[in-house]
Length: 380
Image (cartoon, rainbow, N blue to C red; front, top):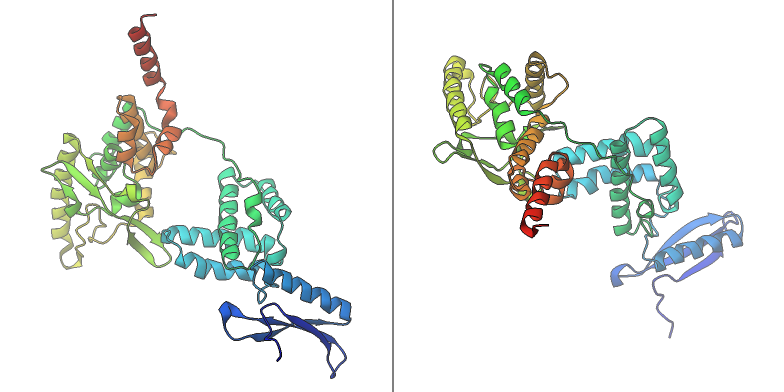
């Protein structure tokens, strides 16, 4: 009785039609019916035997025989659509990663075979980007995208290992977050007084909201009687247009207490918004937004930034962005002695290490106070 051919069995024969040597490999996917796949032919038996052994070794390693010759470029193109589309990340992050793959990875690595990619190829990629003058953060992002893509390839058996994992993650020199002093913050708010987005800047500074979080706020998220607001979503621009999404990480969904002065500012803002709504008439599209466009629709984040930039320049604070107000919120809270964990919760950081690493430069007075208290307690 003949033996049933098993997964990985193979053979070599000479094709009668043209005399070329051909190898075949038996595949038994998941215990299913055996099917035979031809390994690329060659001019000599030795050449074909070598190709067969390579295919058998890949099969034994759990890699894919079918895709052993796929190039990095086509793989990245497919991963940008299928792999990122299935990932649990924000749409803006998906688009950013796909852009990095298209702009920086495919032109440099696209011609190489995926299964022959080596750590040295990754080293050359990163070195070349640095030589072109790209920032440390951009080089690290390029590495991050490549490593994530190769994780996907390893998971699907297209490569034996993720070669990017053998390369050290590029470092980024730490820079202190730009913040406004209390006097500068007051100057900015004075310059914004009377503008339709003055309350937006006040919310960003007093509550530490990200731009997208502030622009996604609904009046139903704001409780003026309890003096709180709830962050439950964010607004961003994607290829599909302006999109509301749930914030990531989970800690970004939070409830923040508001100072009395900000509650007063929001009340005044709501009164002005009702006047805008009456003026717009039938053009108004109600989305319950706290900071909408002049017709009630979501306000494009780029337009909000343009308005803020003009206000900052009038205040003599050119070069700052809306995110500076978020940093300023953290800085002012820490300078007032608020515990870093409370600051972390207010800003919606995923972990306290982010808060400490980003704002450690505003903590020395508190650290000195702690040392003085210890000296007093021990009476040295």
